[in-house]
Amino acid sequence: MVSGIYIILVYDISEKRVSKVLKIARKYITWIQNSVLEGEISQASFYKLKEEIKKVINEDEDSVLFYIIRDLKYTNKENLGVIKNSDERFF
Image (tube, rainbow, N blue to C red; front, side, top):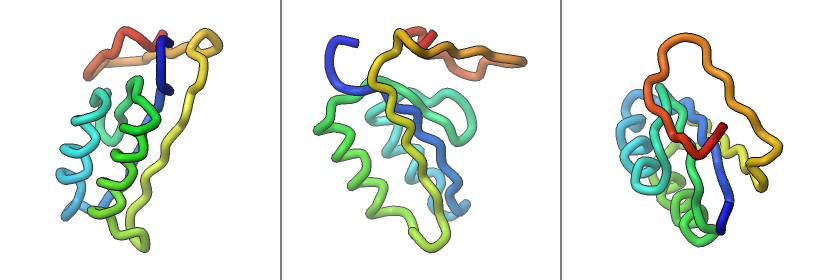
């Protein structure tokens, strides 16, 4: 990884707000499959992403998880079934 961090975003959002959260997240990282996005992001952009999502979600009903991966050399990704979208940087 050249700069920034690599994140996996997983969300469980009310149907009323799910499209807004997806639209925000796709500005920063890559959609992989339903409720999952991943990608490399700078610390500043990660902060912006979180702030934008906070404005849309209801923290009493919705859940957004960020898995922060600081070094991809220790990670593997395996898939079973259909690959809905692929980000080749994560192996």
